[in-house]
Amino acid sequence: MKIAISAHYSRGHIGGQIQEIRELEKAGVDTVWVAESYSFDSVSAMGYLAASTERITIASGIMNIYSRTPALLAMTAAGLDALSNGRFMLGLGASGPQVIKGFHSLPYDTPVVRTREVVEICRKV
Image 1 (cartoon, rainbow, N blue to C red):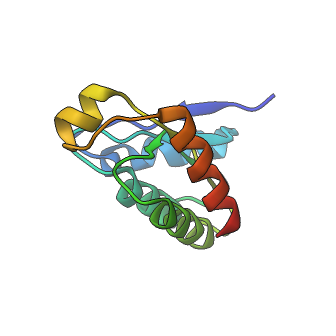
Image 2 (image 1 turned 60 degrees about the vertical axis):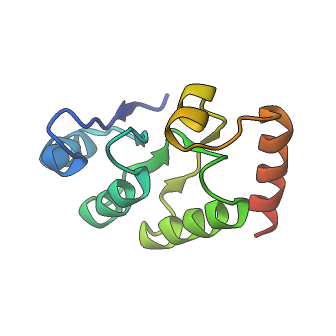
């Protein structure tokens, strides 16, 4: 069985809970999931976690497939995987119309087709 936790932004940013995440890593937690929020991108937080931890898997939960190009998603995943010495897990998702249209000002179209295309491109990259 694997045990996972979710990082949160309740202390203003992920860095505010780094000591807690380190302690959980020592206790045997396998994965820390990092979501994006309206206030911070997940990539910065995951890079910080990669530099601040040793063993725990760092997972994006989720990076939406609309606000970054497929190639950029793949490059970002490869960079985080390299920085973490192979401890990164890419979680992709479509998010929802409120975030994509309302926050990112992008059209929310064909989420299943788009997800399939992004996964194919990420695997190629």
